[in-house]
Length: 175
Image (cartoon, rainbow, N blue to C red):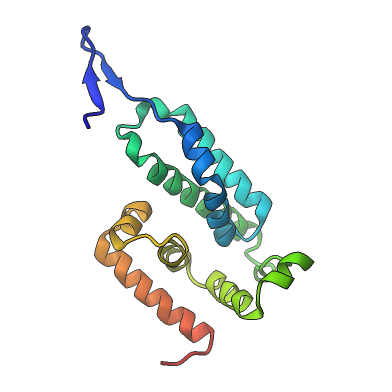
């Protein structure tokens, strides 16, 4: 499907992305993804909302409407990175970041093992955490991970391997 066309006057015509449809279908999943990255619900919702707002504002500049979700997902990751950078500067000399306190309902639903994995995941370097989240939470392929993170496929594979090894060490599972 050809997306770009020239009008009779020579101006470029692009098919507009239906951001509302992408929002309706993927908002909840992207908030969950951001929650894993930043650690609290309110910030995760803010990051995702900002990503959709910017996507909507620039929807006329997107060349391929089929890649709108990948664009929004990258915007969410970049927003999470910005949040984590701001937190790092604020809390540089403070107590290390602790995972959020779970509500009584969440504690009843989520096992202790899952909380330990989340704690260990949050202790990883951001690139490894992002790669593992994309692989095992969103079930993306190596190439999709590479495109989302802006790295090569081999770098994505090695980052995942190093992240899994570090996660195993953090959880005390020597192989």
